[in-house]
Length: 367
Image (cartoon, rainbow, N blue to C red; front, side):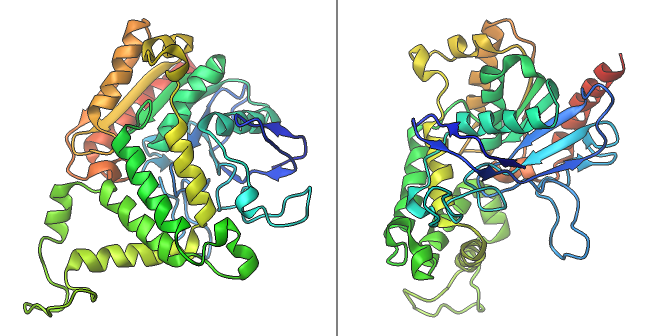
């Protein structure tokens, strides 16, 4: 979907002539009341479910959750996945041309916030003729977007489903993001963000950023279970300080190499900074209950016991603030070993809780 009009951003800057990539699944009902908007996390996209015909390894990133007969049943719901502005999977981002100059945006692409993304998503829904959604659903950064929807457009959704998320980042999370960003911007191939003009990619920085991120997505238990202290090349150590020695090193390097080949460095900087900035309670003196007083939706929050990046206490913080406002809220804390990545995986208790909640939403549609 193309938008020609200028969009005013939280930073005071604006962007015009931009495009949003999106996918839809299922069938829109007559009164357009069965819409589920899915907001994505850092390195995901609008391709949330299904497999592209004829393309290997093109499975949607939440395909275990969304589809016919699944927890979010596309036989009942019309699901919309949208790629955020500034991302690198189809929507306008730093690698595209600035319509005002004809040059690649690069480092001049404006800084975006969660609130900006929600505003753009609202414009997309306006184009699709959707005034009120059944639910907004997101995990991690996507959960922040779902929460922000309830504050920016409280009347436009009936439910908010916030998974493995938080009302803001703590200092440790901001610190991890900053280390990852420094890995990218200090790569000699970064060229101040204008590496496109030099026909290079800051692959080294992207590799390190991904390795740092991946460590935070996994729990200690999972890392020990999958890799332990196993050596990559047999039982004998090589006495090397630079070559790969342990299986975990090999795995992280593989993840870093793969990521550096498909993700845009400026997009990584933009999205992690949007994570840092999100803090709806800031203008209420840090009182989350005051910030959430605007919300009108019913809430379902899910956390995972071994997720130390978005720990359960952050979800319980939101639950408490919602209850203080008399909001209807359900909460599931899943005892899963997988760390933050659990929100993408096939834990039967998690998928069952999601199925039960969305079945309740489906019943509302036929009541």
